[in-house]
Image: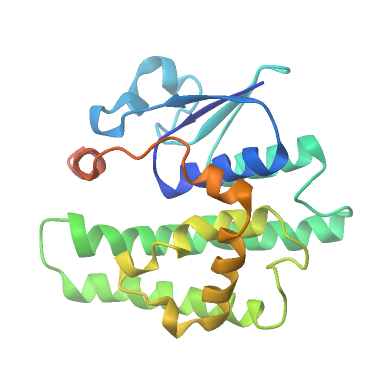
Amino acid sequence: MIDFYTASTVNGYKVAIALEELGLPYMVHDLNLGELEQKRPDYLKINPNGRIPAIVDRESGTAIFESGACLVYLAEKTGKLTGATAEARGRVNSWVFLQTSGVGPMQGQANVFLHYFGEDLPRVAARYVNETKRLYSIVNDRLGVSEWLADDYSIADIAMFPWMIISDYADVSLSDYPNIKAWTERMHARPAVQRGLGVPPKREIADRAAAVQAILQR
């Protein structure tokens, strides 16, 4: 059994989709980010960074935090959605880490400066929007020669997908990236992906906005 600490955010959906694809039993702990439940002392023992998602594997007692690390752990635990060789796993993880180190941070900052910062800084917002577009171009090029990011369907696709389906929020249109758009349609067609996008049920937007403001004001 996996204890899954999450909220209705893109990084949480990555792990939810993986759990559904892998068929692992799990219990959802839905943290209210607007109430800063992710900063509670009991949760900080699981994730000292005070973010979601995190998982605890009851079988081993192992706590894993950071969405990319959760994906790698679950894939390696089951031997699924990752490569069968070190070389193949390296290819999978290259795309996972491009998402966690590039797409997520750049698109996330674009979202903040476009919608939440409280001060109009168009040049700053443009810097993050343009970098997001550059990264999307890399992904789009890859998907022009391969159905999935790392040859076979894997945690690489799961890592990228939740961010790219909210691209419009960062002023990035998928119409400019036809290979990504077709790939998101393939992803949406997977029943486990559809189930994962509903875990947990979405809270009101105001809760997420309050959480962002709380982080900015720390």
